Amino acid sequence: MNNFRELSRKKLKQRGVQIDDIVALVYELQKDFCPTLAKETCLQAVNDVLEKREVAFAILTGIELDLGAENNQLNEINDVIKDDYSLYGIDEILALSIVNVHGSIALTNFGFLDKTKPGIIGNLEEEGKQKDKCHTFLDDIVCAIVSSAASKVAHDYENKKVL
Ligand code: MG
Image (tube, rainbow, N blue to C red):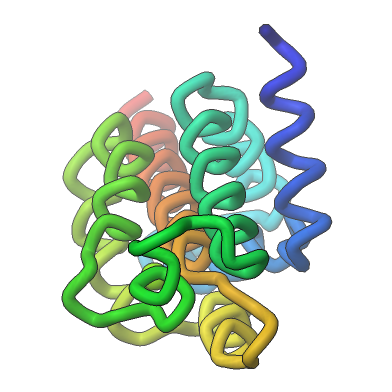
């Protein structure tokens, strides 16, 4: 069962998401709160998030639904997902399964990223508008990974300060 983690990383890459893009956003989110923050710390936090089994399953599920929509395999619900219908909302709900295991900082950051769409998140959204592409689930999943890793960075940084 462990190779689902490896597979989720591979699928992210295949769908155009590099770990470096995620790390860059985590750093941007936290650098003002953690003045001595290093990119390596952000990378470690992203790796920790991606190590969780439920995160791997959420990534794989979301990507398969996007692919299914791209290939017109999702029957009556296909166009709703393919066209990223604004009142669908299940893409955010799936991503919240990642956020929910990473605390309130993850939740508030998720809302912020979903609204502002910086970096790779905005790129995915733009690319998803192309006729043959669908990133309806993937953009929210990336928001969730970034916000969860940012939460981890915030907590670890605070722990070190206390020590
Ligand atoms: Mg979406």
